[in-house]
Image 1 (cartoon, rainbow, N blue to C red):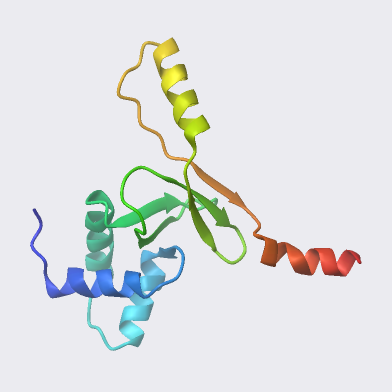
Image 2: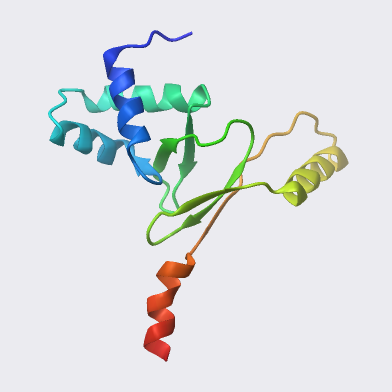
Length: 134
């Protein structure tokens, strides 16, 4: 078990105070803006540890950047994520679970794991586009 340092606690608190997913760089900037002397490498390390322990969700943005957020639910879950505003909804995906197990078994795999993050536009971000079309 990792030691709970002031740096890890600062990152955890900042993540708890953040809505949606955030990059390590943006979280580091927010911490510095609030007066924290924490280093960027320490933020990366703390975020990685929080994700590994299940206290934070981690995903790759469509641009390939690692993003993090405080975990709302424990256990395996998936996300719907707005590409525009970052709104994130945790979803169950029983169909995906069944498909992943079936496809793995068909190819002789056991203990297969997967990550499913679905990116799109939420209803609020689609509204301006619909309003412009009339």
